Image (cartoon, rainbow, N blue to C red):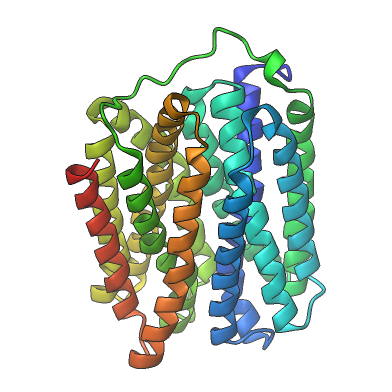
Length: 377
């Protein structure tokens, strides 16, 4: 593959997602239970770390509203480098407040990675049909980071060593993508790049942004607390492996939802995606055992990146008609939903000493977003 080939570009963009989202964003979920066991952070501080990370994601989305496709490749490079640094520095921190602050900075780089990689591949490189591979990078990153953590824990590493391991692997993966990104620019794009032709008829941007925000709230409670739930209910089961199932389901699902999106259109694809996601979120309320947690991980993992795979390319197509950075607005709404999720979960946990009410609230938000996709788009 040469630096300008479509496959190479898609792989490079997927690596940006793997680092900025799969590692930088979601590895904390898998490491969180171990950090609590080591006394580095409490359950309440962990919820704050999650919310501050999502606040950073929101800030990154605001900054990303100024991003343009012509310079997106440079923003990808900065997002990968910043994420690798944030992961590594967590390996030497002993102060919970400073750790929470670093998680906020990591959230900024995660949002910039999402926006920059999407702009670079879908707009600068004009490879809309590569969207599934792009967003599959998130799931691959979750699965790989989870298994790296399980392997490191088996080798006797404590959380500090595990963070350093993730930072080092992120840097190596970034170097693999850097050559293709650094060599790219608008002038290197071929006029023969494929065009996305998924049904778009009259999809309205405002409802799309609103339901995307609800989707952010709906999935994030499972994505934040699933390993913690597993650790509490099934202490003999390594929660990292359950989290790997979450990521393993996410990677191939991008291709499935992309094909379904082309067959039945944005509205119906989003409806079925969000409905299945709601079912996955609420499963542990009724089935609090290994089968229930694995089913929840598989269903939510197999749908949350599908939401992105359907909604983000639709936003990019609308943006071409309106000349607005709709990807940043979408990321902003998603970030707002994700900030609210852990805060609501923390408040409901203090009231009921259970995450069941939080999962019910999340599933309700997803179901409402699904109905909105049919009625309002």
